[in-house]
Image (cartoon, rainbow, N blue to C red; front, top):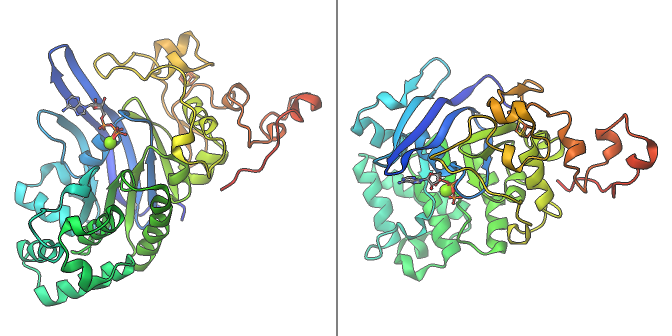
Amino acid sequence: MSPGKDVVLDVEGARVQFEMDRGVARVLDDVDLSVSREEIFGIVGESGSGKSMLAASMLDAVEDPGVLSGSITYYPSPDEPVDILELSAEELRQLRWEEIAMVFQGALDSFNPTLRIGQHFQETLSAHNVDRQSGMERARELLSDLYLEPEQVLASHPHELSGGMRQRALIALALLLEPEVLVMDEPTGALDLLMQRSILSLIKKLQRKYNLTIVFISHDLPLVANLADRIGVMYAFDLVEVGTAEDVVEGARHPYTRALLKAVPNLETPYAEMQPIAGRAPDPVSVPKGCSYAERCPLADDQCLDVHPPYDDLTDEHRVACYYPEEAPAAIPLPFEDQSVERPDDPPEAAGAAPGKEGSR
Ligand SMILES: Nc1ncnc2c1ncn2[C@@H]1O[C@H](COP(=O)(O)OP(=O)(O)OP(=O)(O)O)[C@@H](O)[C@H]1O
Ligand code: SF4
Ligand SMILES: [Mg+2]
């Protein structure tokens, strides 16, 4: 789906700061993002880029001593804005299960080992005053949607299930109270490759069946590219490129996105086989005043080093925080791109030099 005007979650100027001995760490840096109703929005970026901070911000769940500022607005319907940062603790608790549910990173072990899976579902229902019978019916339906045998899983203790089964039970639990939005932070991180891939088709199926909006966070670009309608690429605590999956994968214009794409031989490549990008991301205590990617970017010039690049809106849907989006394809060519399309002014022999392979999405 392409993003329409029907925004369900609007993040404006989101910033998270930590006071540290060696200075203030800005681990989320003025992020703007609108998630449209019923889309799957993927967020990718390398470790430490701020993906989990952004996810936590969406639910005002940044842990102390992190301080979140900016504005986060949830729209249960288009004319009913809810200012998430103004909610009371009790209102937030309700919102987090009933409106915007989250599967936290590393949550696979969040089941209480002494309780059966079914008790986790029952406790959630009673904590939210939901009728137990209809709630457990939904639980069974969700578990079978996720190809789990409901009675067997509900009667099991967490350790009796495989990692993949526990992960799916966790997703079912997150969806128990019929939220509009599901935020999943690295939901496949602890799973084996086969399970990672198969969980994608389950997520797509759930999205369609329950008309969910999904924010899916991963460091694994090929995985996200196979799932998301739109993708936001994070680098050094901010989104550097946002567009449809097609824009970002086949028409990437930010040098960092292109470096990420270059690091995967093709989009079916497992993340583990990606080549690292040379150089390091900035320290959150001393993010450079200019472009945060400048130190690693082959196109960096004085302006890049001096002034943080504003977004360049290439289309209504595709924005890039870079001064040179038109130059990026030639500077960072991708093996699966036909460079003759990217560089119409090139001489013919150069245009034919790229191993013109189709993108594999
Ligand atoms: N309690 C904290 N105090 C100070 N800095 C923190 C704290 N928690 C996280 N950070 C920093 O915030 C930045 C963003 O972290 P975040 O967890 O959002 O990254 P991420 O993109 O989710 O990484 P990963 O892919 O490893 O999960 C990192 O530089 C991290 O070191
Ligand atoms: S603004 Fe400059 S340094 Fe930053 S990504 Fe673009 S070209 Fe590179
Ligand atoms: Mg994370």
